Image (cartoon, helix red, strand yellow):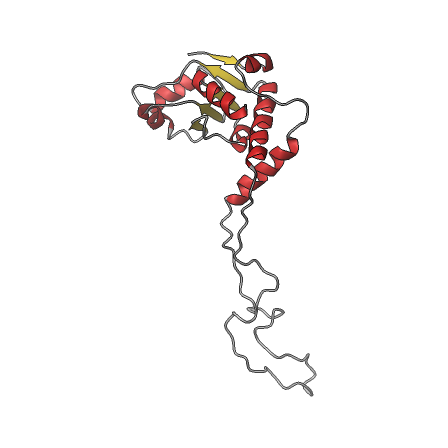
Length: 201
């Protein structure tokens, strides 16, 4: 197995629809922000003064003690009191139009190709399903620390790669713009290139 750097010219020859200049930068930003926001659980919650435990009794009389007036032990200015303007459960999800996602994918793919970080490989297949064999085969292709491999893989290859945390095997039909930006190096098989050409058309 060998890896060949994918240039802009070879990408166009493979019918990848790249973008020119800075076109699509805003779409890429909005899409990645949306992907990350959609992963937020939004379950952070604090108690306000009506929810914390504590008596409703006035602590001391209003006047005559020389102390500041105080009506409740649950006041936010007291230790153990309620929280003012604290986080409440909410939905952080954002909706992104399909055309914006498509433009973001094209922008991310273009940027990685221009930086020389996308490589074409014939195929990656590990027959024995062993992690050691996968690491050895991958080391012959790239020396990058974090690697994204796009293609279709059999069960033994998935089994060999699943314990390598810095490597992700993905189908080209499932990859998104954030995935393309996350990894140091991207390996693409010929069938994955065909899928990407359809998705960027």
